[in-house]
Amino acid sequence: VGSGKMSTIRRPCGQLQIDASDPTKGSTYGSCKLMDFELEVAFFVGGPTNRDEPPTADNKEPIGKPLTLDEAANRIFGYVLMNDWSARDIQKWEYVPLGPFTAKNFATTISTWVVTSMALDPFRCETSAGKQGGDDLKMNDDAEELNVGKGDPTPLDYLKDPNYGSYDVNLTVSLQPSNTQKTTKVCQSNLKHMYWSSVQQLVHHSVTGCPMRAGDLLASGTISGKEQHNFGSMLELSWKGSREIILDGAEGSKEVRKFLKDGDAVIMEGCCRKEGIGRVGFGQCSARILPAIPFPYEVEEKIVQAATATQPTPKFTNFKLYGFWRSSCTWRVRIALAAKEIPYEIVPIDLFSKEQMIDDYTAKNHMQQVPTLEFNDETDTIVRITQSLAIIEFLDSAFADRGGMILPLEPIARAKAKEIAEIVNSGIQPLQNLSTIQTLDSMAAQQSNPDEGVGKKFAKEAIEKGLSILEDKISRLHAADRKAGPFAVGSFGPTIADICLVPQFYNGRRFGIEVERICPTIVQIENACKNHPWFRAILPDMQRSIDSKK
Image (cartoon, rainbow, N blue to C red; front, side):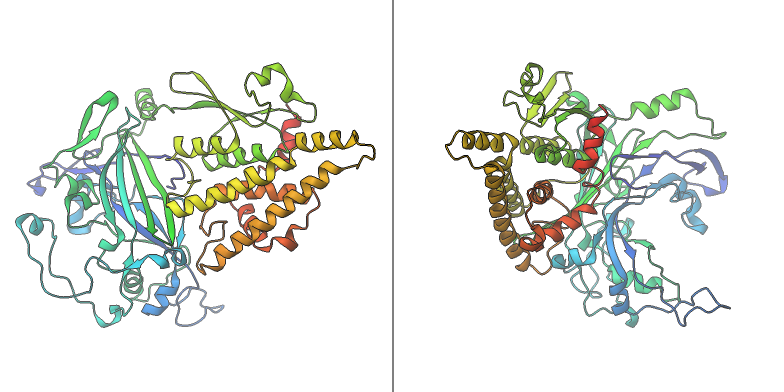
């Protein structure tokens, strides 16, 4: 289950042990009572399948060849967050002698973004263990019970990695009951707490000759540290149900959990952050639990109602965007709405026909400009926000748990992204506005020797100067970091800087500027944006056809 936005999973049913202390009494059928999450990081395998010999006409299936440590390191394409859901009571019954089966097969949730190994390289670090193998650690009774603190195993020769280490990925898990928008952070862990590395895991998986194919997904196992707040599952956090976990509920109330209830949402997040490098985020891995549908699997109306009731009411609704199809400021907001996956109604305002001057629209936007974003707040009051950057910052803050992050969290990256955005927003875009061009043309017409087209000439010079400055600034930023990502501030995902650059490039070409010649770095950024879901299907010409139907 991908989790680009809050997804849902169904509480499973299965066989449960009748007597927890006596398995000889057999099992009974029912819905899981001990629903749990497991905080994990998974990786996708890439590259060609490992094989002893190439496939032939008679032998089309590859014959597996064990991977070496070096080969495995080059086969890891990228990483995602993973929630490996567990039905603990079903698991207890089937675990001996067969191991978990139906307790684990009903759902696995992963985050939408795949973070490449290259993007994580600057965040390499030691594991919590430091080195593998060594003296036994001191244990207490609790540690003995949950197998925590045992002596570290020494790897066999094929697993001894001279580059042994991990990545400094900060991980959190928050819970959200169905009756509130509030979330409670219950776990704060880190990928470096895993003893075995991803490379070692892939090597061991292939040691039998198992063919590892591109697209195979391998998970880390539960990521837990030594402290209670580092534990990556409810089983550990509640210490097998002996401790209570307190959550924020509705209207200041508190709720108690030992395991997960219907309607609970589990929200996992992860990121790397280092001064001088910036931030790399994994997005969210989130899902809400729907009630079970027991045998004979008939969906009763009350179950449907219960499932609907678990979805929290959105805080802001009924979005309308007043804008002009060719307006770069309107285009920016459309990109931000796409980034946050927010449905909205388009209300066209034709600047050529001066519809922005009509009293009805002037009452909504006193500056008689586009765009204007209109919506209802939680009290059903109509709210209007004008100015594209103010709208974008509102959307990024109000919908922080939805879609991608528009403004970087790391202070320097955030400042650089806003700097690029403001150069476009304040230093270029106002000088190319239709109203500015018309004003200059009108003033020129009053001269004794009027210069035709003075407005467009002025706008072209302003755009060319601004884009040249941006090219110099951005190319220097990318040259300073050879591991920079493909977007404006060197990130691996677009930011507010890219949201402003792409519409400005469109206008540069419209005014006859040779952007490919003067801005080669930004052209590459534009190409990366064209292939990104935020920017697809919202080009001005496509928007023009939509507006013309209204």
